[in-house]
Length: 102
Image 1 (cartoon, rainbow, N blue to C red):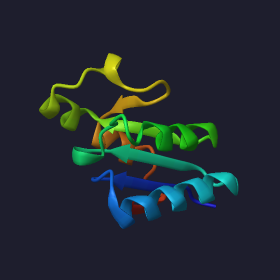
Image 2: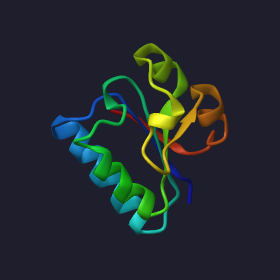
Image 3: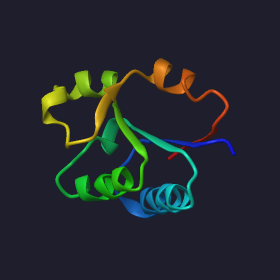
């Protein structure tokens, strides 16, 4: 079964919550899941716990390096388990996965 790749561009609202629920459910069912955060979805104190749940379920959670640079965010500031990643490499490693952008 192909993995599920989500690119999140926001960290609030119904679409964000639905994306997290989809990712957590897929991971809980044993499906490979990877989430790339960019823009307004960069880790914030109020949502870091939600990303932690995904990590506990075995999902990969990464932050777009370009978005990090635009916001002056260093890798040391990321929550444990969340890694910086380039968009091209992140997508190339998962070329045959289903992709959703939220």
